[in-house]
Length: 134
Image 1 (cartoon, rainbow, N blue to C red):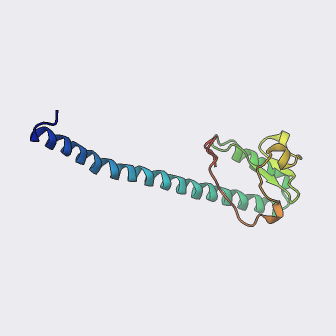
Image 2 (image 1 turned 180 degrees about the vertical axis):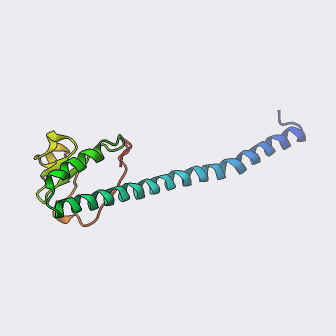
């Protein structure tokens, strides 16, 4: 098959074309994936900040009964899987699912918090590969 110069030239040209297109496309796909992940983390962070502001505002006014309704309204969004607001002891005070309220976070979701609540100093948003959720 590669006995003539013409067939060798064609094969070499095809290999060069595939490499010259394949490498940049692979790089672009990798960048798109990374940018999508970064943007998703930013959007989740912004949504959390907005929710915290609204909840803090409601709690400062003394409207604690409205906090549960705020959580429920946010939970109606089909892209929100869970919202749990905990106290310092890890007891769930407000949640989308009523059966979680009053229970400890380690009972509801074992291993969700890897450290004590007092040791948590910053927010961490990560992707759960199994469920593809943040």
